[in-house]
Amino acid sequence: MALFTIDEVRKTFTNGEVKEEILKGINLSLREGEITALVGASGSGKSTLLTIAAGLQPASDGQVIFEGENMAAMGSEQVRKIRASKFGFVFQFAHLVPFLTVEEQLMLMLDVSESKLKKHEQKKEVDKILRLVGMGHRKNAYPSSLSGGEKQRVAIARAIIHKPKVLFADEPTASLDSKRSKDVMSLIRDLTKTLNITTLMVTHDEEMLGFADHIIKMSDGQVLQGVGIIVEN
Ligand SMILES: Nc1ncnc2c1ncn2[C@@H]1O[C@H](COP(=O)(O)OP(=O)(O)O)[C@@H](O)[C@H]1O
Ligand SMILES: [Mg+2]
Image (cartoon, rainbow, N blue to C red; front, top):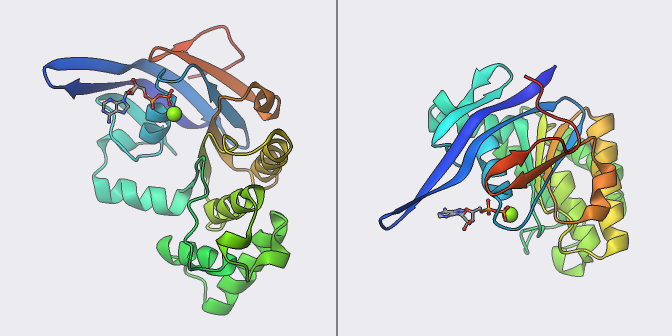
């Protein structure tokens, strides 16, 4: 069953007098426990689509249905709550807080997501997730002492510490070399499968597509049909 359905989503930006339609009626479904990769030329609308699906900006038209409810019709506070408790985010750069240790970054995330766990339970959870991403030995380290690949592992741990249903990743490997990119992608794939997360990932890198269950190709604000599988309403 589709956990997430995007139905005829459109996005229009107005630059001065000029109206530009950046998304031209997108339909797609994401299924539980699967990775969907969004590919296409720069400027084709991938990030715009991801941010609309994630409730970071509203669509101009269409529906974004998550767990049976249309997020496009919700108020911003309701969308914020879903984002904080049910979604996780990974971007090209890890964006770690420089003056917090690895452990503290994750504890902060639990606070933001309004975790009901007690402090000592939170610490246990942080330990568990750090071990899962292979960073258990670096929990007292500051970001400046981590490599690019290690930072991205921490960013991934931070994105999943509150057990989100959906992981949104926009070019998560774009700042890494080929070996580290593959490591990070196999980590995302393992987590998607073992924690039954639904992942939507934008990527430029053809090498990463082997990690995806579905590939959706976008061109000029539209989904190209006949590439990979998808659209299952
Ligand atoms: N806030 C905005 N205002 C105006 N134009 C925007 C805005 N956000 C994105 N765009 C335009 O939408 C198009 C698609 O952008 P984006 O979704 O970032 O593409 P991609 O991620 O595929 O490179 C680009 O032409 C971009 O300039
Ligand atoms: Mg982009």
